[in-house]
Image (cartoon, rainbow, N blue to C red; front, side, top):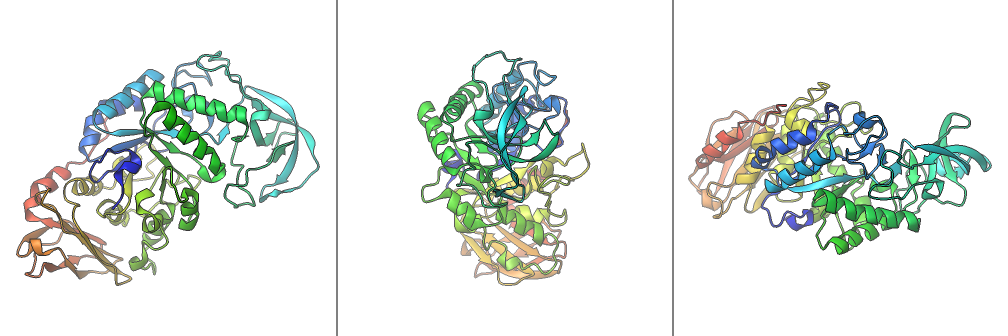
Length: 505
């Protein structure tokens, strides 16, 4: 069973992490206020931890989602990039939102983006070598002088909190030469790409913007100082770490322990390493993991299963992180990068999404992450509809998904599992059946403790079933693909779970 302390839940049962944003939230600087106002409602839905978007000023000002990092000390406090607030609000509103979410009982994770900087205040003449964008190990020109946007002086902040300024010595490379006004990938003279990154494109150290030199002692010391300041200033509990596959693995193995030692706190961490290969994620975690990681291989299996075209449901967990290391796996169906139109677009088809969430929310292994866009939809663009079953599935996890688990994953198009429940949670226990478009039934063992009980269909629209004397029953599922059954005594829990969260501004 997943170790809840990995995410700093303090022993919370059946934890749920909520990604507390989607890519296309309105750029009206209201999100921090919304989260503060609705903290209790979010917690009551079963959420035990929430991951907030990057809170610092980005190069696009109020329109920046937060990943075009400009000034990590400006949390919506200084007039920079044409705005004081960020897309989500002001510094004071952010700190207030964190306090409200924590007061409601949730662990709060800040999104940390340290791989690159964008929107520099000035350019410099730098000797650099252009490399092949498809294989960054290969030079394609002789060293030459380029004009690189690498001067970050933050005039709007004027040294408040830190007088550290950035120049080309703080970076490894860039993707724009102002002198010739063209894109490319340039490695600065005297620098080398880090070797402990993914080997995609030969070496995938470079991602975007001005690529931070994490091995420069001046830079790493400043980032540790900033991390201490950030934790103390904002009150967040932990961190979600962006773009790990592009960053020196050893950097966070220095940075996280330094923050934990300096603050005397656990500082739970979840890392994003975008790979379809679970072995690559396991190698990054190593023998002594210092963080959890998002299970991107499972996301892709859920994505392909959603098309129901020759996908073998019995193998859906094969070659995933939750199979290999459930204690450090954060399972998810969707996130901001997989939304329609985004860089890693791979959104799970709506018809399969309830089944996908049942597979991460109702099982023992892993810590599930729910996506904001699946909970509320994305009305700003209309790209995603809310998964109407999701609030109920979250409620079922919170109240009923306990006890031993029994899997029957023995057919390509029809699988199921049960949780027996336990004495500590009256009415607990459940049965889940999934199919890829065929109406059928699956015989599952619910547990001898339930013999003779009447179980009702919470999701799927079927009639009640009676558990046999041996603790088993036939559980129907329709071609819609998902049925969930629970003890009849759990009816009040179902009724509460049907009240869906509604976003009101």
